[in-house]
Image 1 (cartoon, rainbow, N blue to C red):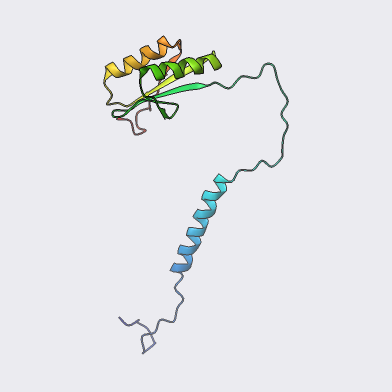
Image 2: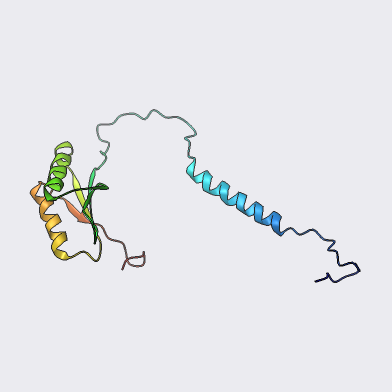
Length: 139
C-alpha cells in the first residue's frame, strides 16, 4: 500500500511515534510498580518505649478448605490432635490469643463445627470467622 501525498515513490516521510510512546509507557509502569516496593525510611528513628502502648495481637489462623487438610497458620496439620497441640502451644505463648477460622463456602457445616470444638478443647475461647463483604468476590 503506497502512502498518499506528494511523494510519488510511496515513502513515508513522517516519524512514527507509536513505538516511542509504547516504550515510554512500559518504563513508566515499571517505575511505578518498583517505587511502591522499595520503601526506605527517610529518617531512622529510635522510638521510645511505653508501658501503655498496645501490644501486637497474635492471631491463630485456621484454614478449612473444601478439599485437602486443614491448615494452621499456613501449614498442614495431619490430624485433629495436631491442631489441638498447635493451638495449646500458641495459647501458652500468647494468653490473649484469638483464632480466626477461614472456612471455604463449600465446606460442610459439620467440619467447621468440629474445628470450632477442637479450638475450644484447646482452650481458645476467642474465635472469629473470616468473611468478605458482598461485592468483593464472595460467592
